Every structure is written in C-alpha cells, then in structure tokens.
Figure (cartoon, rainbow, N blue to C red):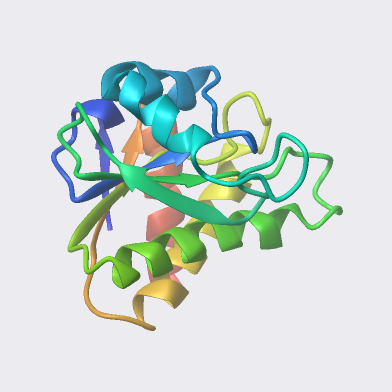
Length: 174
C-alpha cells in the first residue's frame, strides 16, 4: 500500500474511493470534490442507484460503484464510513467493512488499482490514528483474499500522511 499526499480526484487509478454520505448525492470534503471533478453525470448515476431506505442508497459500511466520468479514474467506488461516537458503537467494524467491501467491488470489476481517502477522518470525526490502524488491517485482510490489487491511500496533507505512515510501520512490526 502506497501512502501519498495528493488530490484524489487527480490520481490515475482504475478506481478512486469516495467517502460518501448515505444518499450518494454529494456533500462536502472528498465527496464534494469528487462530484465536482467528475461532472454532473456522476450525480445522475448516483440518483439511479436505488434507495434501500428513505434517502439511503448506500448504508454505512457498504459500497456502490459508478463510472468515473470526467475523472482520470474509470470508476468511483462510493462507501459510507461511520460517524465517530466514541468508539464503542461498532465504528471500527463499520470502517473495516468500508475498505473490505470497496476492495471486493474492485475485485468483482477486475480492477488493478484503487485509491482510498482517509474514510471518516473528516467531518465524521473518526480519530485518524485509530482509523489508520483499522484501515490498514482491513486492507491487508481483504488483499490476501483476492487477486493482487495496487492500493494507494491518498492523504490531503503531510500531517495525515505522517499518521498513516506511522500506523503502517506499526502494522509491519507486529
């Protein structure tokens, strides 16, 4: 897994992962940036995904896939991370499912490369240090269950990249 500091919307990968909200209709942060960069076709594609509950096209911990439209990536894998509620409400399991289900979709579509943002670490308030450990473990577990996949974790800044690189070093030692 590579950890880079970049704008995820500019990465040339088979898919980029969107840290979406359950409606999949755009929002702030990474979600808004991906929707803006992909163009209005992405919103229309998301509207065509059936709701599984009122205003919910993708429940927390699940993933959906759409074309990438104007992005360099061929696909966008949308996943909904958990909102941090203190750590004892199943947040770690839900976050792990985001990574695992996104990787499962990448395998299902025969993709060779995927880039992830730091899911739930923005407005959803998941502590980055804890999220990094959960994500790296989930990616490792999902990676051994399928064909090789080139995975990139895209960080917005040096602070976040440092946190993720530190967690990566810890997981390699254990």
